[in-house]
Length: 453
Image (cartoon, rainbow, N blue to C red; front, side, top):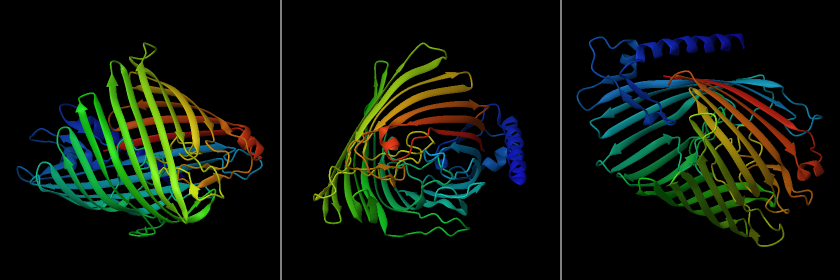
């Protein structure tokens, strides 16, 4: 732990020095996916070490850029499984380092490589998303046939739309990667992406991830259309195949088609993001009939900070109505973000009804968020699932109410390179968990420091 603390301090002071060098007319816009970074460095006689490292101009139309990030987290649970009688870790420490290079040649060819090292200490029972000592998080080539058309082959993090069904899993220590082929069309108002992808199975060691394991795959077409500057829609079809999938009703091969429609934008001062998904296919010898509908509205309010808003999220996500009929109604969230309802990550998007009001505000460099979530089972015949869609709490009683969750996030952005965040969550068990013998209040907290360069 001492060595990791020294590494953290080293990166802190290094990034602080980088910020001092980079101030001024230079523009560095770091994307969630670092291949989307925006870099603008004016010509200078003596640009300095960081600017020389950040981007090398190779002629008039080509460049080679470098960058990365270091993220430190300390995470703690009390009664992680809603029981004080279960052996539990008190606190653990996560470190994630990523370094990338991005080659662009004549606006036609791109090569992007991103190394990842995700480590963890003081946690006994590791999840697959906790440790990956060294691997390629992304490694792809992209060729632009024209300003509108491009094709990509290789390993990539992928986020579609609002990330409801396809997300990069930023909350956990290890991101979700796909080995894939993709073709894309883009103009000012339209983006259409077609792809076929195989998720990378994470190994804990050095370059031991399992690639192209066709026991699970996903493909589809995703169309985003901006009809007006403040209004757009997503229309998509995603087909996923997964062998030996386990739901509350049993284990079998799960092959399903997800047909979705999302409408998002602004109306006057109201921001909205609403989505509907229907799923069909087969689960063993059963037919799949599942669906979800979600609504998210937000309105600015003149409270506290210069940028304050209140919002409401609510959704219904189908669950199986019987384990003896010829139909499966459990919705599969495909590849949702690992922290679907906060980084506490106890409850995932299957067999669920939730009501989720929230408030957030920004004051200077500080941002504060407060939210409350109430959870119910959609169907009393189905269990409760975790964010990776694994069965967490089987259906062993007829109670519907799962619990209350109260969460806060306090974030501070020192500059565009350094950010700090503290998140806390309390989950009070409802009648379903209590009748399952899980009646202790869960407490969770995670502190995050991230440095980008």
